[in-house]
Length: 286
Image (cartoon, rainbow, N blue to C red; front, top):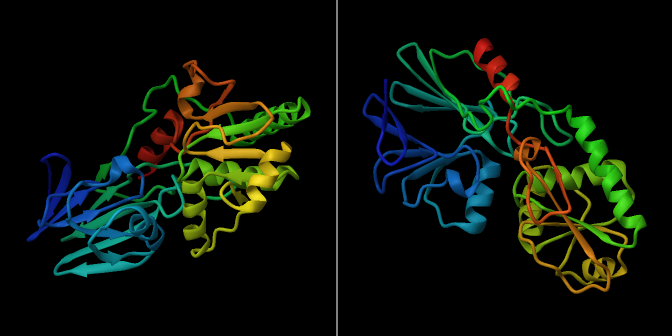
């Protein structure tokens, strides 16, 4: 088993090539850990992904899907075995395990080792070779407990609504959006209005068991609730739908722990990635 790089990481095992969140047109398989744009190849390598990820890929991009691989399922390709386990990053995100001749390679993709309201954190997988992300791979990044961040967000939402304004979140359409919606559903009794893209993704994820309470902004009910003012708006783009109420924009990103996010009223250090202690703990246990 060999690891190489050619416009992206790949693993050569036996006669097969497996591209890790990358690809080469007509050559090998692409193991896609999740459906964020920076993990999708710009070519037509045969894709292996979880059913949830496959649903989002089909929604926005035309992909040649070779195989869906649910958590715990195994795919045999000659003497090579591929399997997947949750990575805790977004709904449907996966770690991939490639095994050949008693050697096990684990590719984590983006991982979050901490539980959230909608996902369980990634569990370490014993590996001979570990390929792990390190977005926050510096000792400077130690996130507050998730419950503490949730409490900060809830307090801010209540404060903004009481002032007669609309709290809004600009977040990733896949991942952070679902967590923010789930948090509001759990802790507050206010309608959540979602942008078109987030609404489409939520619809797809509901087919895989994720249940969220929200109103699409492009629906009559959603537009009416938004114009009423006592709601929360969640969007992947910063654009203001028509309303007589002022909109107060916030972001949720791990970078808010150390950097000022200009142009926003509030920034919360809520991340879909593991912090430094989470990464180190995973490595030590794998």
